[in-house]
Length: 272
Image (cartoon, rainbow, N blue to C red; front, side, top):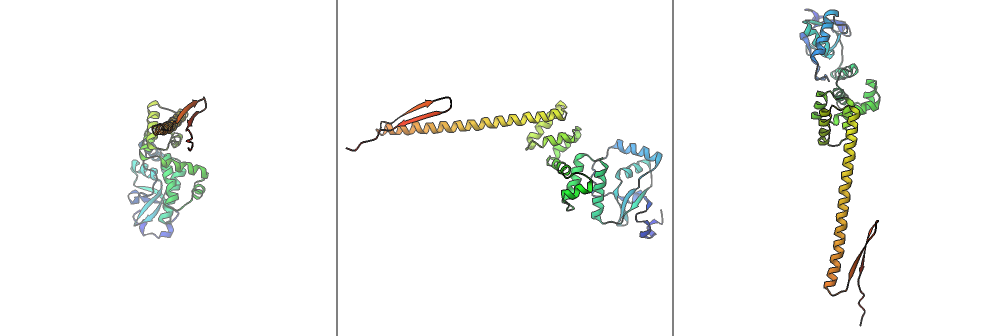
């Protein structure tokens, strides 16, 4: 390894070579934010017995090698005490390196559904892809991509609770039916306390929405009734004012099952 950097670049591009672990730097666009210790230990045990079967992918950067794909393998190799790891060096731009890192991690399906959604959103917004282009690169339906992106409407606090309590992506999507974070937090609290599965969660949200609609309708009818009372009071006040002015006006209220009818009688003053 001591003379590796002095060998021509062309000879090693797209070839498997061993690179010192201390020369490999993380990819700033790595979508995974958490790595389970038990997974790394399990992988390290496999690597210690069988070696690294799939080389890491890197690119040259400022005298070192930026990791494109293979973060878990790199961590496991360090756990095993390896000083070098097999790598394939790609001659690609930073943009393409970031795209490959995101796509490789998404396709491995070991990201959380929120990490996956963030990675997809980054492909679209940061690298100027459409949902259709992202779907094509990832081998997914465009509707699937759209549903993944909708998960990002949930707040960081909501996402953290969902992941910490091992709720599913379907739990998360159900919560999107509620518009406000306050409502969602109320439901999340019930889901956690009562250990609700997806079906019970969906019923809870159905009941909550229906109850809200009924209450909203009741408030609306109450407001209409108040307006009717105000109108009736206006009529009564007008009749009283006419009577005070010496006009023999009167009113009569007729109420049926379907409506209330008010009849106001005002005498016509004949000229002398």
